[in-house]
Length: 92
Length: 190
Image 1 (cartoon, each protein chain N blue to C red):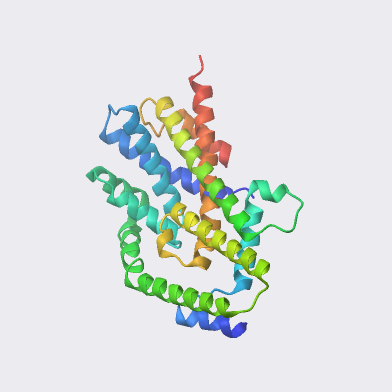
Image 2 (cartoon, chains in turn orange, purple):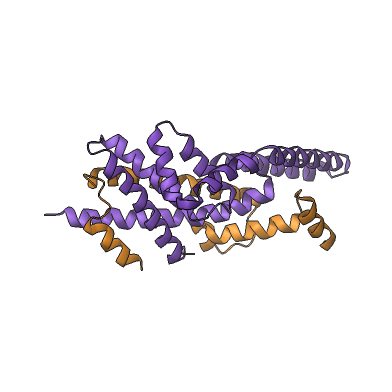
């Protein structure tokens, strides 16, 4: 295993090791809202991938909707407006 | 997992910088133009928060740079700041020959590993189930690849790593945009 890892870093080519994929997929699971709440331990890789794709698509849609809303709200794109100051203080 | 507030702050700062660019240039924009401007600034801003360290961020910047309209190029440069030339060029260098070679090598490895598995003796039901599962994983990996900017240049492991980072960044972007939208709505109420 360590051989594989060191070879990967020097050769620059990724040997796709199963353990790496399992580790990454489990990290992905923690990020996804739906799967995280489910009690089951047995979530297949394809299910995780599907949820991931759905999640990313919904995030993209949300960015699009928010851009639409903001384009109507910000009559002129004025970054020095009071809103920006408010938001900055909210996020600090 | 909430995106760190440092990421959200960085995004907000860069996004505002980008939007400022538009207020000085075009006074009367159509709603559609404004929406595109907001979206483009947001995408370049969240990408620049990674400072060229991830493939998706480099791809987003390259996309923002190549959109038509000379204004957009200046926008990207403004948001990226003094590092802009290095960051824009980075995509060209890393996205080229070295990545193509990687793709060829990963394909060869995949073919080789598929060939090996084909000769293994499984009970028929098990073989069918596992091949269906593999096909599903492959198909969904392709879909994921199409969703992540620059995904077509990544092998499987990189793809998942980039996805993790991309999701966190998207969340930060959505959080900040949502806050600004709600605050604007509140502020515009009579």
